[in-house]
Amino acid sequence: MSDLNTTTPSSDVREIRINPIVPSESVLVATARGMRPKKAEELAPRDTRKHVETCPFCRGNEHKTPPLILSWPETGDWQIRMVENLYPVLGDDREQAGFNFGLQQTIDGYGRHEVIIDHHEHGIAVHEMEESHLAALFGVYQTRMRQLFASDERLKYVLVFKNFGPAAGASIPHTHSQVIAMPVVPENVDAEVRNSAAHYAKHHHCIFCALIDEALTFEATIYDRQSGAVRRKINVGQYVVERGEKFIAIKPFASRYEWEVHILPLVHQADFLDVRGDDMADLARVMKRTMARLDAVIGGAQYNFFLHSVPHDSQPQAHASSYHWHLEICPRTSIPTGFELGSGLFVNTINPEQAAERLRAVTL
Ligand SMILES: [Zn+2]
Ligand SMILES: [Zn+2]
Ligand SMILES: [Zn+2]
Image (cartoon, rainbow, N blue to C red; front, side, top):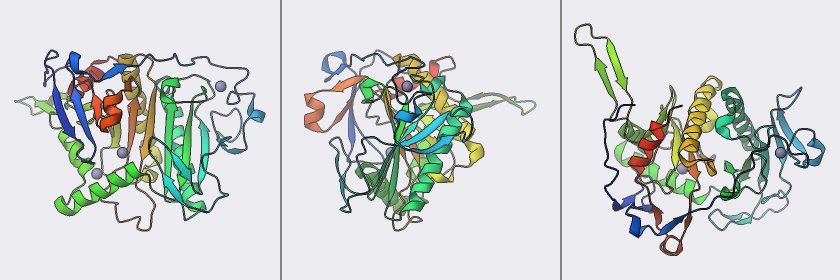
């Protein structure tokens, strides 16, 4: 892969980067060895078995799971199953809406908490799944989000997320995602929505689109001078990790986590529910390739991912132009230390430009 933007690996960086979308969230990028206030995490190995006799999420143990919500395909052997959560953090039983969604979750409200069994194979990683399977999984996310919003108008946000591997807090080793439908918008999404709306009011464009344009600035097309034909296209935007026809994976300039990567639609779109069925294949491909890159660089990636889409609150159209849905992938490789916890400042010990370069360099 050609390399237009060479960074010198030996140059140490120490700078505070302000998150362009949520300026109150800043990151200290500190790569000098002696001053990394963080230590590498000893990852407990993840469970890679294909089938586990005692696992309630494995095929053949369907009777051990809570009630079924949906399965795909509907007939024959299931590939994806969605069930009620055995230990829901939210139930329909309480009417009081008070909700904080942070590191310490205080949950008191009405809503739904459900589990998606992403694949029948117990320990399969996302990059090992077929693209068609991943496309179907994104389709299941979308179907359920739509059903939940339609079921109760008090629900303002449906958070879809996944914890993969013990380091990421997955309590059940079988690969799964979770869906939490809630009556309030989580604080971090709300901050993104408010700040991108303020940016839009001032500059008349979506800040996420502006960041994608910036990430692609280094793109070059080399033409044949005589014929005018395209000789070579170089896609080496400094922050671009993977690029599909409709979706892009980028390394945020102010990444909180060393290997954090975000996937966004290239063309402006606020609501994940608006992704068309025939675009899911491209999303699946970008996701699979991004996860394969992460896995190759980190080795057995354990991560959390979160789907951030425009809230369905009282004015669903208010943020249609200013907000841009995205998937945040946050691999776990280091443990926050006292400095990080005490200062509230995220510390990133790998220069994001170099991290993007390493991810791009993986041969798939
Ligand atoms: Zn299992
Ligand atoms: Zn946009
Ligand atoms: Zn976000």
